[in-house]
Image 1 (cartoon, rainbow, N blue to C red):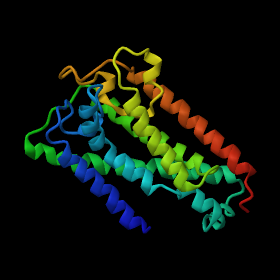
Image 2 (cartoon, rainbow, N blue to C red; image 1 turned 135 degrees about the horizontal axis):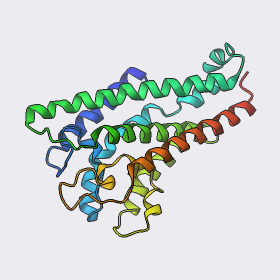
Image 3 (cartoon, one colour; image 1 turned 30 degrees about the vertical axis):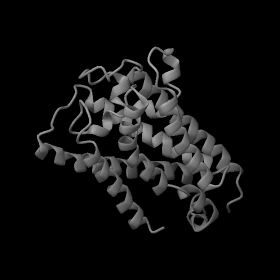
Length: 237
């Protein structure tokens, strides 16, 4: 599908999220996507999840087949310009980093309209939570790209999205051992789980955000190394 159309689709998902989140009980009312999904009843969780998940679904669809198409199609000509396939791969991950910065920047700009609605509450940890949210998405898209080196791009897309939704819903009980909550990457970008709102009983202290960021950085390094090792063995030239 045309990239411009897919870009518009992602922006549409972000705009839909803006309007769907108007009636949710949030602390970060100016950037509601930072609060995520609370641990609550299934009906309430589904309500928050269906809103929070929209842009992430759009982004995973936007990047579906991004790396595999280049490795098996027109990207071969680009790879031949580099002395090392690993250098080319690293450039792709840097480009992904920059593109996601643009997408998250657009998401923030779209949500600034909430200022005109009089919804301007923010938390003290909004900056670090925004960074964690960005890293979470970066790792998710990177993981999807890695899976595409082993599987069909559609299968990789399905696995990643099923994991996001299933892990968010299944790990949704209070009082579980701390390490259980860290098994879900989606938790890493949620103020509800990091206790960075303290607005009401929906906020829980299940994760430490500094630990979350450290884990995300380590995971991203592991994904990049695994991708480099795989692409080194691939006959793309």
